[in-house]
Length: 160
Image (cartoon, rainbow, N blue to C red; front, side, top):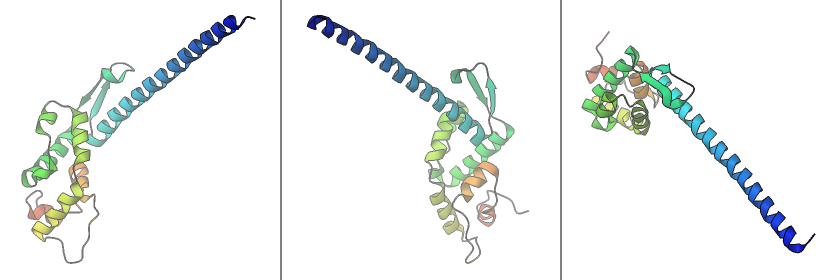
């Protein structure tokens, strides 16, 4: 075979190989993006008690609807934010029902720092009593009452 023919075959094989590699990497990226979108939907639905309506197998054809649990969570978060603005209740995102934005904002808030301020501001916990760092998040998400004396003192909960 002539040298120029070998060169052309090499170039053609490199182009074909490069095209196959590009197509493979493109499909991998597309699959990762699709998986990430489904994970975001699942996380938002699980974290905020949202109801999900699927219209197809595509994540952009899914609607998220607030449930009664969602509304109660948002009320607790909003009440905490009224006293501690750094809790950053996302009024506009909730009104738009942009649950991905709500989830993003919730995950950015340092609730353990706010919880510590709440404890210091009230002094309602008995001497030496400790609560877990996630107690305020548990209260907002599930109405966990590990912080009950503090929550009562702040008027967020009523004495039982």
